[in-house]
Length: 146
Image 1 (cartoon, rainbow, N blue to C red):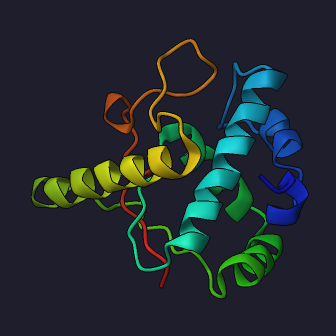
Image 2: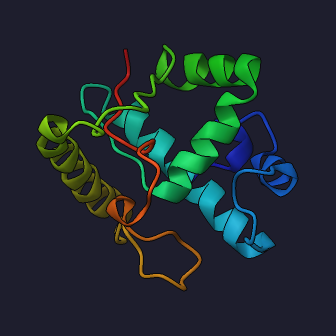
């Protein structure tokens, strides 16, 4: 995998350490793991521009931190993807959207496992956040490149 800097032009580990909202109890190893998984998510988006991708909680948090640096986020997306990776934060909140969200998440997990040879959703205590449906916020839903 290419280095983090080739994907993200902002120090997201530092941003996470300074954040009052995300990764409050995470240690340096957990933050680095989250960053690595976010860069893999960006790789999937670049390799599969036609697919809807649904992030895990930790990936979504890194994504939010990246978007909090709007110039860098836009420039990084343009460089990596050719356009800004759109984030549909409300998708899945309505019950009728849930099947589409579940399908997008399952497809993202299958792509991830095929491309990276590791589970998309990792067990709690491994440094990675567990499945999206165990969390209260509805933000890491099916997202698409528009």
